[in-house]
Amino acid sequence: LGIVAFQLLTGDVPFREADSVSTALAHNTAPIPRLPRRLAHWQRLVDRALAKLPGDRFDSGAAFAAAVRESVARAQPGIGKAMPGRRS
Image (cartoon, rainbow, N blue to C red):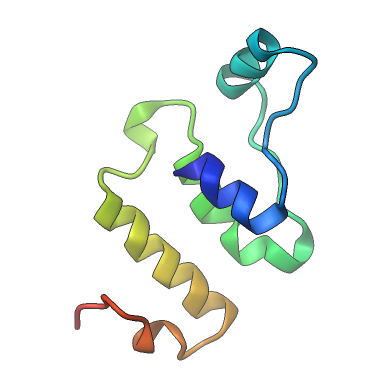
């Protein structure tokens, strides 16, 4: 989900290398790319979703979805409360 989120936000993949083996290695060794300043409120979500250690990633799709709602709320306060699927 982290790769998809990064690509949806930026229009590009987070790791682009000369070949598929180098790209796979970058996923495991390269630092997580920084988002452009205008997308900075999404960085925490991207960092956790792309974490190198499985224990540092989201535990479930529901946890990821909650983090998405939090990121939306940071970007546009009040909007996250009206998002479909939000449980109060």
